[in-house]
Amino acid sequence: MGTPEHSTTGGPGVSWAGRVSGLAGSCHPGPVVAVTALMAALAVTAGQSVARCVLTAAAVLTGQLSVGWCNDAFDARRDIAAGRRGKPVVDGTVGVTEVWVAAYAALALCVPLSIACGLWAGAVHLTGVAAAWAYDLRLKASAWSWAPYAVGFAALPAFVALGLPGQPWPAWWVVTAGALLGVGAHLGDVLPDIRGDLATGVRGWPQRLGPDGTRLLLPVPLVAASAVLALGPAGPPGRWGVAALAVAVPVAMAGTALGRRWEQAAFAAAVAVAVVDVALLLLRGTGIA
Image 1 (cartoon, rainbow, N blue to C red):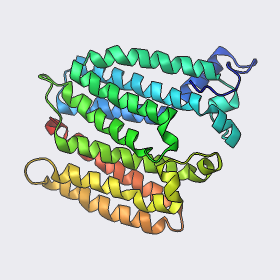
Image 2 (image 1 turned 180 degrees about the vertical axis):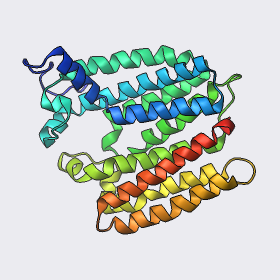
Image 3 (image 1 turned 90 degrees about the vertical axis):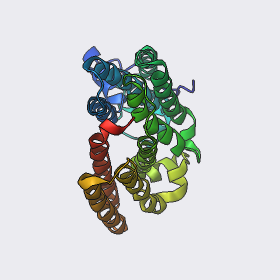
Image 4 (image 1 turned 60 degrees about the horizontal axis):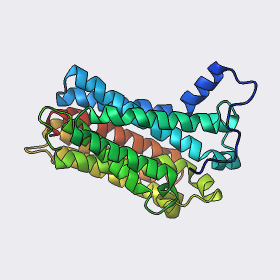
């Protein structure tokens, strides 16, 4: 399982409340909440029933929790070596074994919750979760580190579409846009940590590109996702599609230019374009299948 040689439980002075807090912090709560909320909103706009929306959100939540906990548990040794304070496992507020148990428990819950949304829907969602686990356990340090993000993000809107009555297959453009958003998310997520990752031997795709290469490439998949979301559905793009492109392209170009001196500008621009993409995805929700 690759568990690091580190204490298997939280420090002796850590209370149960502290351990629960540490466990919550180890799941990468920001992305977990963001992805779960987005998929719940997409389920609503796509037309799922209230009960199915709740079930979809629960499946996504448990899947994301399992991935986040797996990531922190597996990376504990590397995080300790890099001195990445602020991570509960590194700080000793929760033990590696406890995080592994939480990861497998969340995964065990994710399986029946996903299948309850329909056989095809469940299979697609679990494929995405499996891809994310493969990233955590193996592919993060390889040239294929982008692939799990592409598969995982493409699987999420497909999961929502297949959960609709009749289990309709998702539209090609929503799957493509999801994959592009995943690649952009990978580049943006890794960009701030590239130098530290290289120092600890992590050589995924962005690390091989280097900070400058990653910064220059970062807006490309995000703007491409904007174009697919605006132009992919049948009919004219409409005012929202045109507005999305009118915002995404100049913001991405500005972020790339300013990022030469201020790396945070590139990251902020990428976040802004991603927000535009997410908003457009929700607006297109009724046509994802």
